[in-house]
Amino acid sequence: MDDLDDITGGDEKRGQALRQVLDQLARSNNPLLREMATAVQDGQLNLRQAAASNTYGVELTAPFHTFWTAYQEMTPKERDDLATPS
Image 1 (cartoon, rainbow, N blue to C red):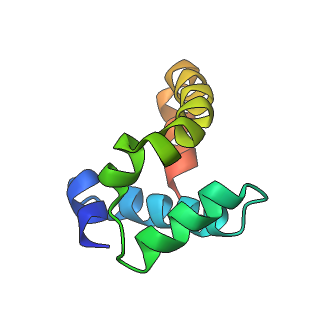
Image 2 (cartoon, helix red, strand yellow; image 1 turned 120 degrees about the horizontal axis):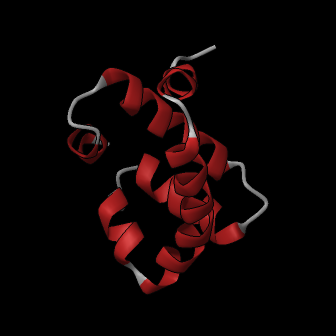
Image 3 (cartoon, rainbow, N blue to C red; image 1 turned 180 degrees about the vertical axis):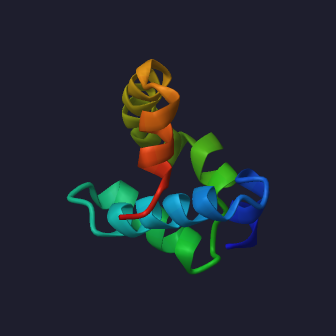
């Protein structure tokens, strides 16, 4: 999963958060997201390829927009809390 480090700019907290999201997606009720997350985790597909693909991109776009809208409305403290593992 070396492209995850590239995507997160080497930031350990972001990398860990992204890996946790992939773990959650690998257990998702959505079969396409499960397939994509497992392929990324197994190194068969990188996250950029998945996001750009017609197959997985649509499945990733809607939840990402929901997250991004909520994230942008968060205070800096809320963003830090979100990035800090419990």
